[in-house]
Image (cartoon, rainbow, N blue to C red; front, side, top):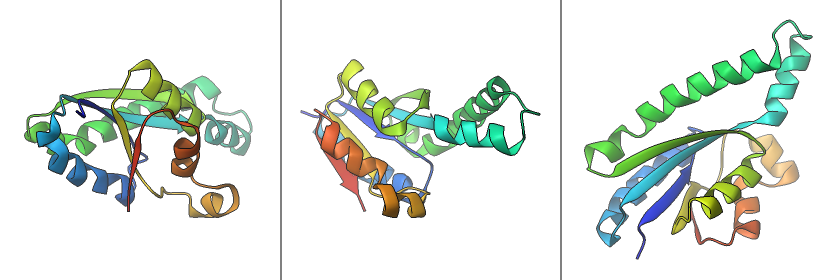
Length: 145
């Protein structure tokens, strides 16, 4: 039975498609969907460099978390409108590591994620976060194209 799902999202169109699949799986016993967004620490560091220290790292993280929480609420409306219990999780760090850690700590039944995110250039050079999660996770992973 699939009772708790972790849905990592970068708010891309690929991660939005996951919502449709979760709704199709609703009758398989899903009790809760944990929607997760990871603010990539690498981007925080790059932003700090771009602004040459004019904006401190804490402020960047704080604002990024606020924006992510707003986006998560909009992102999850279709799931909430269909009676699923939703919780939010925002982390700062390496996306792959944070996703795997959250899946284990929250004892999810499955991770459902889009097969591609926003950063196509990085995916081509280093591999996608979804690919890394598949290789390293102990939990089943369903990729949505």
